[in-house]
Image 1 (tube, rainbow, N blue to C red):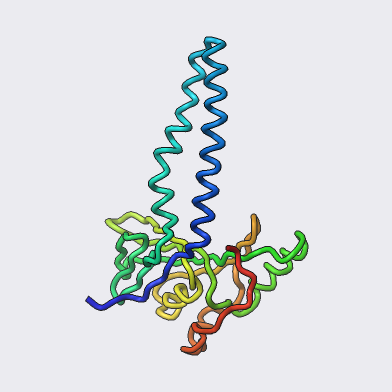
Image 2 (tube, helix red, strand yellow):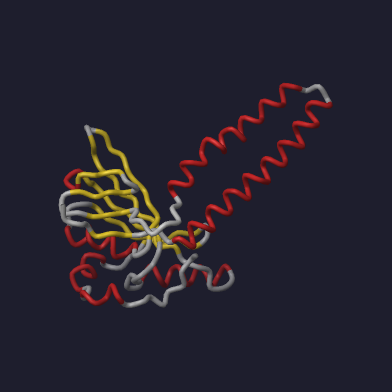
Length: 207
């Protein structure tokens, strides 16, 4: 079988996400232990039911680890007839839309960050950036989607833009703000030189 075009996770970003998750988990467990001591001393045993949140966190841990890989393994792989996203296979003929979001880093205060966001959304898409890719498709008559965070997110989107068989969208995220790209992506995909992918972007990136 021919190898597809592979897109990899950013290990540094995923390690930070995992760290935040486990720190939050540790803080929550500490708080609930203290609450449990108070519930027992006050003989308010119904309050122990709140421990279900801890159980939920434990239940979600495998999913969180799977979605934030810290090894250099492809999370998205694009073949001529199919796409794999987080080990789930999608028939390319069933893909209806592809949306990419570039994760931007802060450059200053709120006003400066928003100006930077607007500037990025109006300009030529940057290369070598990390972000999220969401692929929507129809399977067995039902519409669903798969999601992954990976490097070279614009390059991944351009494969589908150039093909022109699915709707596409590019956006930029900075903190809680989001702007959709107003740049002509179809024109960009057609004019983009083969050497462009090797050029390192100077755009401020979130890590």
